[in-house]
Amino acid sequence: MSESTPSQELVSIALDERSYDIHIGRGLLQQAATWAGLPKAKTAVIVTNDTIAPLYEAALRLAIGAHYPQIHSVVLPDGEAHKDWQTLNLIFDALLGHGCDRKTVLFALGGGVVGDMTGFAAASYMRGVPFVQVPTTLLAQVDSSVGGKTAINHPLGKNMIGAFYQPCRVVCDLATLKTLPEREMSAGLAEVIKYGPIADMDFLAWIEAHIGDLVGQEPQALAHAVKRSCQIKAGVVGQDEREAGLRAILNFGHTFGHAIEAGLGFGVWLHGEAVGCGMLMAAELSHRLGKVDAAFVARLKALLLRAGLPVRGPVIDAQDNAGHYMAHMRLDKKSVGGDIQFVLIDGPGRAVVCGAPDALVRDVINACCA
View 1 (cartoon, helix red, strand yellow):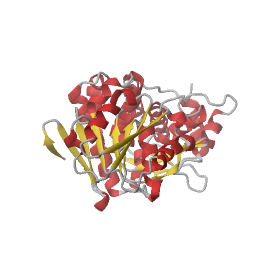
View 2 (tube, rainbow, N blue to C red; view 1 turned 180 degrees about the horizontal axis):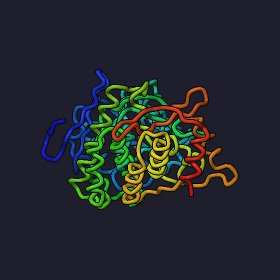
View 3 (cartoon, rainbow, N blue to C red; view 1 turned 180 degrees about the vertical axis):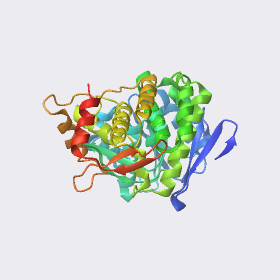
View 4 (tube, rainbow, N blue to C red; view 1 turned 90 degrees about the vertical axis):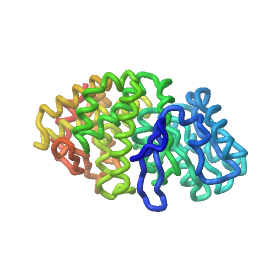
């Protein structure tokens, strides 16, 4: 990691010819220099949503105008409920309608939904065009914009249709977080907290000491949290780009969390809320398998509560709630032959992907749900 200017720091993702930098700082979006060195093209397309467009689209358009003579915009409906084929096609309709060629550069301006869909569109249009991630939520800055996972949801499962496709650059302008609603801020903190139990207990202790500052968006604390989260993810992705093994640990809490999202209907709980609750469920399963002690579970629960996150899973089906969860979890991308695979904590700071007896999983779900 190195500083390039007093206001900007870089974290590099090392993937040979697909390597790129994550730019972290304040006020980056408005600076023309932020966008220098990207692929040259006549046309750029900004993909955003109807919440973010009035806030930041004009500033991005002005800044990249120094590099791209023709700029078009696609404004999508906001929310996880719209992360589907119908909305994805709005991007393709615009690209084709404007006669965009394979040099056209896409800019994903928004949260995780916009980033995932723009990346998937970029991977698919003319079999691949360049794109840039410009995440405007904490969750997207510390997780979904980094690493090249792109996807849309299917009614039966989250992110089940997609591709691995790396951006050319990720620009995390911390100033955009000032317009983030409190609930979205808490949801993003779930993905920050995630990195401690799976990789860095010193970082977890730092989060515990600064959680009030993070909730309150204290600038220095926020900058460190984003930087350290990106460093950890960059290290994992650099070793395992396509989730053949190690990268799966980044899904801590996601197996349970995705079941919550799909079971309730996408958008009822925010992704980070579901992941936060899912991490506690995974920690409880880890405890019942003898991998961590009860104090570790209690410590994680206390931190999630301080971050403003739910710690009790919803009842999706009053007749057989655990069965409903497990039906969704069998569709998880880590599942093998219908057997559910979980990211569990194999001692503080270490994660492992493994199965667990169905009866024990049922017990954990029943114990952890409201």
